[in-house]
Length: 409
Image (tube, rainbow, N blue to C red; front, side, top):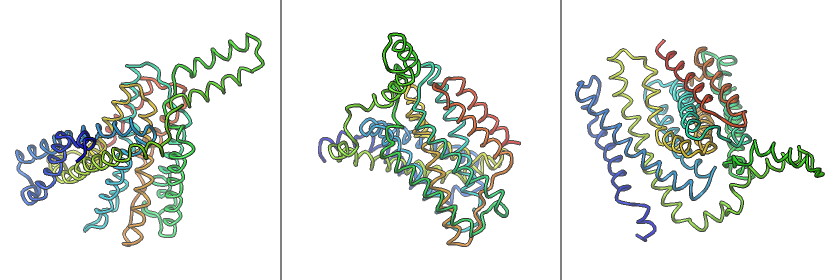
């Protein structure tokens, strides 16, 4: 093992891997002991241990994700973490659908929970933390607008359209094929542009340039009698604000070539640490259902808790980015995760439904559709502003609290 690899695969990283995978193996062997109804003391102990292991692994994922983000830059660094978590989650949902029993609503319930958690709780908390610490924060409106445009379209195809043109909340087989093609095509084109010519749209902007300096510069040049119009100056400053961060930095191809070993090792370590988090969260689903059932809690609450745990590494990373004032990275992590979740999950479950001839219920209830629609509308309103504030964050958190009330209603 070279010195560079030893610096990455540290004893702490090895301990995290051992804890995560050891807990997963232990749960597999302890399966008969944890079948409902589980004795109260054992149930609480098992849940505490699982959550503790997940937290330890989550901080390891956050460390590797931040190192990759530093090395690769955004949006590539954020995309690595997002796709790692989402792909494992999609594989697990597919495994459940291919297993015994009926799970017609698992994709809808999972993606709906993720949507409200990300757009309401995580985004709201990040805007609150960043706004209180840094004041008004400037984001790259072109990149955020691209995310939100995809979220509007993909969420409509996933949750609203089947309630209108489908039957019993499911698309008809002849409707599923064009929906699969449209969803995959839109998501693939988005990724192609995000990682290619539009990568700069997803980088941080310089708050010193825009928007206040834009107005000041335009005014001063107009007064001094220069031939440039105020609008041209504003456009010039706009271009500078989107490119200053990445000016002079090496391209992604050069970075991959120069630091190939480090990136591959860190990527492998990140995936190996993420996997037990997702696996353990699904293993604890039966324990949560058992415990919440005894407390009389709604069944949907278990899915929400699982979704929170699955996206815990991304949540911690986003909050740390907000604390550092990196509001565009918050968007890349949060909005990017939701676009990937919907863009990958819906086509996969529809394809499985077609191959196995089982119904896939996607249409949401009127209450959830209303809350999701209002939350997306609030996201568009919040990030349409030149600067996001703590007030925007408070509004997002209120909507998530209302979603919690609806779950218990």
